[in-house]
Length: 528
Image (cartoon, rainbow, N blue to C red):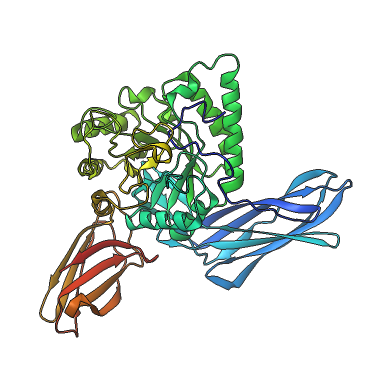
């Protein structure tokens, strides 16, 4: 049902497009586990709660015992044991068995710069049979305070870009793990720490975000105003039932991923349509019932006029898709005016620019990569309420309504890389705009070099904790001859830091310096 008819903008590949496993279990088994973690930031403790959904396929009632343990993946020697719990499962039925809460002292917190993960191994014993169900989770707190996002008690102003899956002409939606990882490493290279997607993702995408640090907003595929047109004869009810079902399936599968910080209810469906609002609230209520602690939002493209009448204000934060200069007439000044009207319509709420960019999708739009070099981010930085921005998009993408290409190459030219992930000049420009380093100055001297770094005070900004300076000196034939890694102190937004390095290599042709995240990804580069 959703996406309805052709109201969507991505490829329509069919068949089995994702990995499939056959799982063999005892006749009484754990179907899934739900893990919730709540950190006490002041005490540096965390409470972990596990609920096991146990299914009994036997024709008689069964008594079971559920127990287990969890441990940090980078500290596997320290295991935390759950108190066992017994329960009776009716014949051909299922039940939720909730283990007593577990307290973890000195818990490792998940952050996009330090994505610490835990593994839970939950054991079901039924008679002489045993079943073990394992899953990964993270301990973190992502919340709204006033009009800002906070991650683990620290304000974060986020930036990133979206990737449209299924765009490699040879792979389509049946993507390989190597391709998924390569694309997302590219996204990290362009300083992505925040992304959203238009439909439920391959688990391997979420696994990458968990392990390498990308905050994710995952959505059900309710896209386009046409979805809620002509919904008489019971269609509206069917849409709501299907939207609720898809959100239920999405949360059931993905709720344990620490990278997911919000659920997207729909995208560009005309937020002033009463039927759209009715749908979104129905789906929202189910999402809140199943996962009460995660944020919710709706990505609106109808905030350019009378924003206060739009349902975007009904949820936890405002999400605005803006394309002044391409899909909408205007430029940077219109961006400023629009944000000003949105902040006045919804005072005290965070605003995320959930899409912005440059598409060569209209005859009137300039062709070529040069206009894609972002200028709108500078306007976003003028408004303290802008808590996040997501560039659209990473790649030119295959879509059934593509404007360019033929057959498997039917596409929209929208990305900073092409269908095969070849980088365009806009990739490097977006990397600079998306860096938490505003200025990086490198000066060579006879004995070495000096480096000065200034962190951003505006978007994107956060405390730089655990960052390093990686430097390499190149000599004859431009070969690397010397280098090192220097730990940086914690840097607050808007803080400047300088250092000097003495080199032993005498014939230095050039020096290259990178500011590096704790995860190993470079955020800024300078050469001299």
